[in-house]
Image (cartoon, rainbow, N blue to C red; front, side):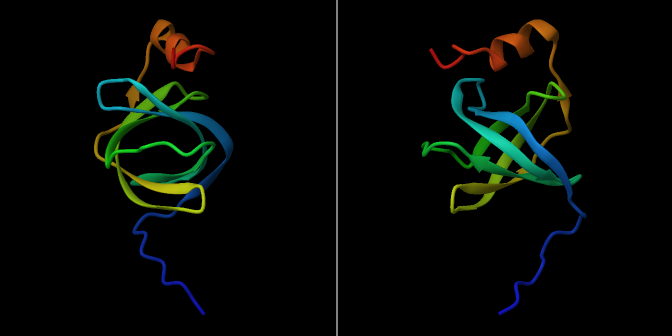
Length: 105
């Protein structure tokens, strides 16, 4: 059985880059690992079951960037996300707050 590739842009692995999924207003949803990215979106591994909306924010802790994203698919603890905005650099203070241990509190 073969799976047809529908992605328009080639993806590149990110070596399990740490990330967070946030609501559009910046509230914590769940931690994730960014498995690979393309210019159009990303595939993430979810570390816990969370109620995810179709529109969210993906925060890349390593590059301190965030994107508005739309969930395209999910299953087996992973999700495919399509960027709906360009990458937005996050300032050091805000990045530290988002990536902090008690951000969800």
